[in-house]
Image: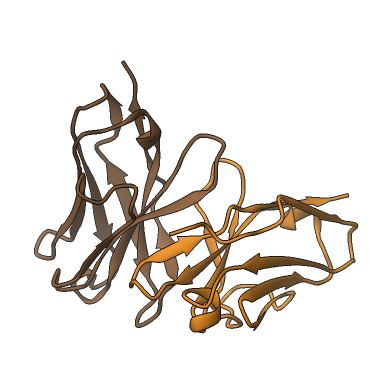
Length: 119
Length: 110
């Protein structure tokens, strides 16, 4: 069974940093492209970042470019999101999501982890 | 990276059909056959309903169908059921290699 489980969320002050993790199981993690998607309270989905299976290609939403860094450790079956210079508007539930093999859609999602940026 | 445009809400009675539109540009929806649709119930993670404009993942009811014309994609749900009440989001691949979501549509089953 495919499982994705995020962790690392919490309360952080504006300007602070946080590192999210996503533990993957039930599939060959190293073969799949991965993403981070977030959802502010009561708002819609916002795509955040993408990483290719071998980490050679990474993309970011304009809203986080230069502040967030996506990475992965295929040996540990884990996906990461390093978030720096956090702002109030970064408050959201952060989901890790797997791409359908060879496609541009997310077929499996984790339950999400809540990040709250507030003083 | 402007969000795709969806109606804020749609509604229908059980057994009826509804259609949700998703409008983008030639740099996203209109330029690629990589439109997806997601269903999200309150407090839950999104669920993939349609990928590549009109393909259903295994296990998704054939009451859900997708299409595209120009810069606008559409999700149609036929034979509306109470369990279909949820938020629906479209998403597209973009010319920058990124992805973009629509603002979401709240479906109410009357």
